[in-house]
Length: 301
Image 1 (cartoon, rainbow, N blue to C red):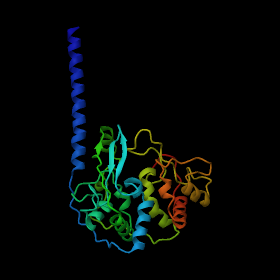
Image 2 (image 1 turned 90 degrees about the horizontal axis):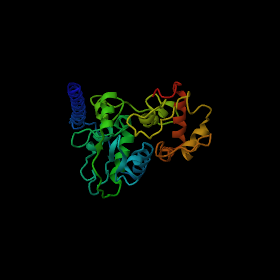
Image 3 (image 1 turned 90 degrees about the vertical axis):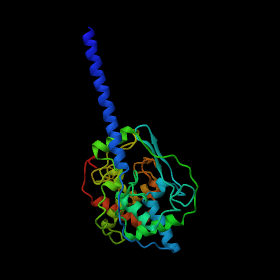
Image 4 (image 1 turned 135 degrees about the horizontal axis):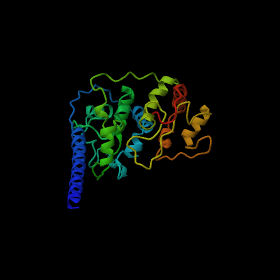
């Protein structure tokens, strides 16, 4: 009997050791990637100074969900706090206390927004630069002009803390866009944006913002890295949620958050309050693109 207990103890000790080694390896590898430094020579982007351009920049920052994440005053906030994810904090973008606005140069803004890399050369955590990478120079310049124009806000936000489950999913699944800097091709020039207009091509340009939750194929499903209580993203292709919708139905749903069937969209998961601030022409272009996308079953992302 003593021999049995001894072997049980040995096996238990080995298992505990393996668990500790695995946890240590996950933290070590993810921390090394989080703290990797990038040397990126950014492209020159003209930053306008006129009031009209700044107002347009605010519009782009709104419909691209910058304000949704960083707050109405761009002072940053605790965006997610969940045991499975950790504490994810968005930066104070203003020139106030603990804000980046007092030190960032125009090149720093371009590097952060388009390349997902901070002024210290380290990748920005959960910054959706893989989506912003596609912004035209005109849109990017206008957003930077707007950010630089916002009044200073003082903040005293806590630091990011990435929980073990999110680190493991990021490391082993490859589906969590925790570090956009890892997947952006920093050497190639950004794609040329389509001309502004009520076209499917321009709608696709706008829809890049939707891909973080709904997937590149827009067919929805579980959102990689989201807290366990979050619902699945809906299927936006002609094979899913929008079957039977008309263009007026789509625009009304985006404006009011209520679907044609009378279901209220929850803004904390589907930020219709900011996306619905697209102009009528932008929503029409987005609708054209969604209708032109290949029909897919729910969850293929």
